[in-house]
Length: 273
Image (cartoon, rainbow, N blue to C red):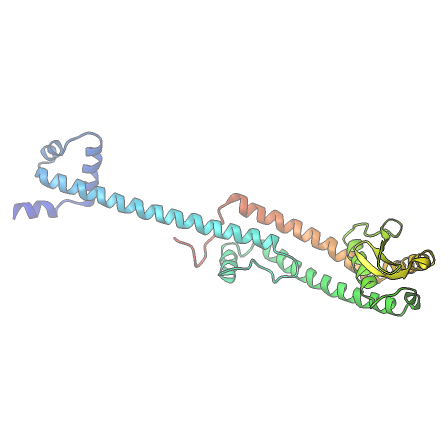
């Protein structure tokens, strides 16, 4: 009965104190003598204290690893938000993408990131619509140009795609194709020559008519590009690309803070803690 009473009055704090003293060099008999308890009790509770500490350390390690992976998932998702290809639905694709978006939003609900993402989506939709409108206008004035009959062509896709490319390049601030440097010829079969404007095929022409037809094609391109530059939609598209570049720069700056800090403030439903 005495032994059971002695064991029952050992508190967790006393158990930890024995473990500390034991690790500082005191032997179990010495601890038992000083505290006036059975040495078997001391040994037993030192062992229990060691087991408790190992369990707590294991749990702490699991929790720490889970928290690190959670932060890494949030950082990876934030990085994907900044780099997703244009035209996709905003947000990183993959398993639990919507859950990750909700988690990041719960961590940083007042971050400017969310406003920048909305602005980017609006601008990308506006760019897509303006690009479509410009393409429709280009198709109209190309198809209505009777001078195209000088070329043997199965359709109007080459000239139309070339002008769409020009519009995109100019709107983004690039030089685009140059008639003098990028209008070229390629030999074809049966005495024919292919006319190309950069990577775009314009049609074929008989070799003996090449000089005259080349002059006509150059004149058509000059006229088409002049009309293209006068389009109100092209100026709007240029402004959209400028705004998009500004928004993406601001978004990148905000996301860099998250990814380089590696710790996301706040909490969410999926936090390990």
